[in-house]
Length: 187
Image (cartoon, rainbow, N blue to C red):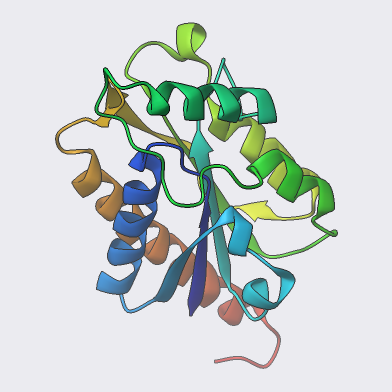
């Protein structure tokens, strides 16, 4: 089984989560890679059994060009310790979805956000999930959030992301086994 984790990351937190998800998938024997959204081409998505898409929550949802510019401006201020992820100033998930053709296959959505009620923070994963379904993907699990505090990934969230990757691999494996068992002529 092959999986692709596509992520958008501003300050590196979503990138860390994507890498941890890949590690969890690999723990379960899944061939997986993480690609920033700027590298997520049709060729990279070919022959993938599971696509996992995630990004940061900006102003209650998925980032926009204006929120990415604001994040870059914040990182450039001399009085903070923020740094921009290498691909942060490129295209975001909204633009990527806008040019994504109809597709099929298994998918999952995640986000990074402040650790407060989603009513207060919003959840980018909700919009990602909606767009995955709209493009024809079938979601394996409900969208997941990973938490940041003061623009730093909270303690334990990398491990939780790795565990979620393991969980995704097991769910995908069970789904594959179930599909094979229901195919006429399969034993």
